[in-house]
Length: 238
Image (cartoon, rainbow, N blue to C red; front, top):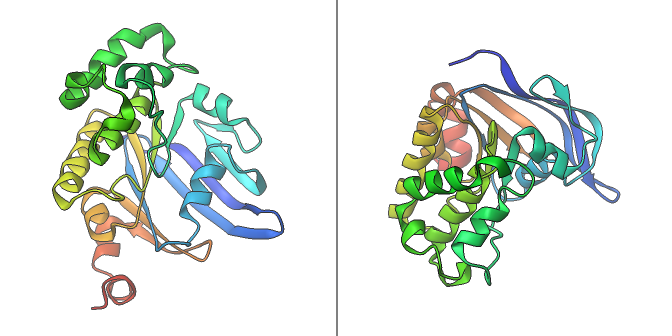
């Protein structure tokens, strides 16, 4: 694994209207790493993702991607640089086919290799290949999540943010999804995994941050955090 950072978040503050949600977040993702951001509902995880990917305005601090400050860049130019966000709730286009949903993923980046990238996504997700002409809204929840990730991969990401990818999936599909995330990472993709699914994420990630009320309250290697008695008390009631 490379040790140089692909993403650095420094003293980041962001929010909505008069409400500040993120109160000075520091976070680092190195190339080839899976970093988990964990926390309960309302901890500020999704706002963090939206601020990193340019959807929510950064009020103070900095987001640095591949050595360049992107804090004030537009969401589309951030995708163009290779930072791709797969949002919570899948956000696919239900009336378009699987094929067309995937092609939309390469609208801003990866257009030159669209066909080979699509075939690669079908190789990763054979079920999408079987359903390529089907309307996306008729897919199961698990298939829609595959489609959302596949669409993200069409943009040839250097770093992908996965926001609550296991939400609403059956335990069996969650297991399948986490195995897929590990496979993508082994192929060299850096992943910021933002999840409520604490223990499974900590078994997958290299490092982790715990968020509470818009602040990082704990960070370290996934193994350190997994065995931390405070985490077990706070999240697992042990």
